[in-house]
Length: 249
Ligand code: MN
Figure 1: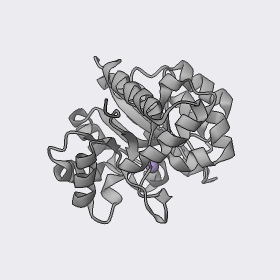
Figure 2: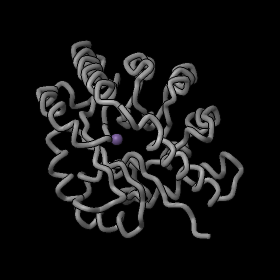
Figure 3: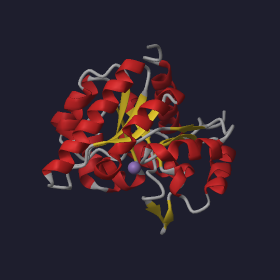
């Protein structure tokens, strides 16, 4: 029996130095990938480059750290949203203490979540740095599925998100950090996905690529006390279940 396909639910594919080469490697390895984008204007460009690569799903996003510069692209976001089931990177980032920037992030995210709820069936990958509580508030009982990407918030907010049916995606860097490792112990196995957040995360001093999620699988096998292939199978099953559930509007 061959190992289940790998899953990278959060990768910035458009930011690799040679995007077509990265696409070919992902496709050859058959890694099920959600290619997030940071601004709506990148979505069509990346969709055209990805072309027929079956394992890559291009998501439409507006990164919270760019919201104050790019929230003028929200109408474009709304216009392009029907073209994909996948949304991200979106969210809130409270590293900035600027109240106006935080407000603009919240306004943008609130609109996006409303549009996704109207459309139904969307899969949203979400950034929540120092803002987990507000992120979970904005999503509330969201009618689609959201994935907390690189979650570093409190257990309390995490539990609320899990109560909404959220998933949590882990990357190799997280599983090396003690806090994240202990947070992941609270997440039921059936809600865990893997991600690279490449090319921002580096592995052996090079940008992480989707097939590097194998490192995250190793961390999960260690966390769960399972064989590698078992951990890999669990993540794959979670991903396929996630795509199957709440798929109708
Ligand atoms: Mn990211």
